[in-house]
Image (cartoon, rainbow, N blue to C red; front, top):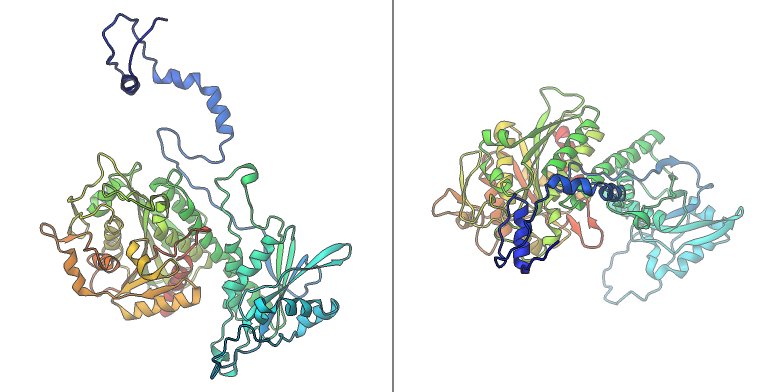
Length: 606
C-alpha cells in the first residue's frame, strides 16, 4: 500500500542496511508508511519448499551461504580388471603388439628419407598366427598405413581398426607399435616405454565403443621387466581418468564405460605371480595419480583449507593404518610462530589447516630413513593486493604441489615400501583479498625467527613454504627434504609447460631426483642456484624480502627457500608450475609418480 519515491542507489543502500537491522532514508522527506523489516528467519521459512526442490537437483554440495564446502569428492578408478592371461580368443578387441627392426645408423645419410620405402615389419609368434587366421589382413593393414605407422617404431603408435565378423559379431583388431628392437650393443639398457603403451591401450579401449574385453598380445622380442608392466598398468588406468564430479545428466562422460577386463598376453612373460604383482603395483600408483588430478581440478568453492584437511584425513583412514594424520589449526600454528604461513592465511575465508601425514613402513625400526616431502597448498591465488592481471581463472592449480604430495602419500601407503618413514606436509590456505589480508610492505616473522618484508603479495607461496620447511627440519628432524610447488611463472618461461625445474645444492639429492624422473616420466631439469642472486632478496628494514628483481625470478625464489632449511641438510626445491596443468585435459597428475619413486628409493638406500 502507498507509494514511495527513491532512486536506485538509495534502494541499494537500503537493502544493504536491512541486513544489519536499521533503515536510513535517502529519499525526499515525504509522508509515507513505515517500512517493516522482515527478520532473516522469515525469509528462510518462506523459501523452504523452493530450496528443497532446488537441492534435489544439485550434483554436488558446494557451500551453504554462510559456510565453505566441507569435503571434496574423489574420482574412482575404472572398474576394469587388468590381468596376465594366456589367450586372446574371447576378447572383443585384440591389440597386436609389434616391434620394429633395429634402427640403422644414419651415417652418410643426407637425403630426406621420408618418402623412402620402408621394409615391412616381420610378424612372428602370436601376431603371425592371428595374421594367418585372418588371411593376411594384419599384414595388409600395416602395409596400407605404414607411412604413418612406420613399422611400430614409435611406442604406442597404432593402425586403424580392422573389423572382422566372427561368431555373429564383429571382432576388432588393432596393430600397436612397441618401439624398435634394440641393437645388440643396447640390449642391456633397453626398456620399453610402458607409459606410452599403457596410454595407447587405454585410448583404444575408450575410443572403440562397447568394448567389454580387450587382449593385448606382446611378442617374444618385447623383453619386458616387471617395472615396464607396472608402467603399462599405471598409465592405462590414469589415462582412463574422467572427472565427472561436477557434471550432470548427459554431460557425464565416463571413460570406457563398458570395459570389464584387459588381458596382457605375453610370449615370454615373467612368472605369472611377478607379472600380476607388477600390474597390481601400477594400479595402486594410479590411485595416487587420480588423487593428484582430483585436487588440482577442484574449483575453489569446493576445495579450501578445510576440505583439503578432510581429504588428508580420509586418505589416512583408508590406508590400513600405514598413514597417520595430524591437522594443526590456527592456535597450534601461532604457538609455533608460523608468521609467514599465517600472514598469507589471514586473507582466507577458512581457517588455516597445517596438514601432516606420516607414512610408517611395515618394518618400522630405528634404522628407517626419515624424509620430508612438502607441497605448496594454495587452494586459490588471486595474487592478494598485488592482484593478478592474467591467468587468474587457472589459479586453482596453485595447489599442484600439495596435490602431488597427497597423491604420493596415497600411493606410498598402497605400495608400503620398507625402510623409510615419510612425512608429507602441506600448509593449506588461500591468497585472497580482505580487510585482514597482508599488504605490500608488511613485515612477517617466520617460525625460525627470520623477518620477511612482503615486497609483493603475489609471492605468497614461499611464505607458507618457509614455515613448512622449518617444521620438517627443526621439529621433525627429517634427514632429507624435498619440496614441490607451482612457484613461479619464470620457471615456465625457462622450461616450458612439460618440464619442472630442480634446484638443490646437494649433488647426491639432485642425482636421486633426476634418476627418479627418468624412471617415472615426470620430467625435471636441474637449474643453477646462483648464490650471488641473494643480493636481490636484501631488505632495507627486515632480514629478507620475499621477492627479487625482474630477472631470474625462479632462481631467487629457490634461494629464498634455502633460508629456512639448515645449510648442511639435503634439500631440493622443484618448481612444477609448467607441467601440473594441460590446457586440453586439465590436471596432469604430475609429481605423484616422481615423489612416490623417490620415497621408495630412500628406503632402499638406508
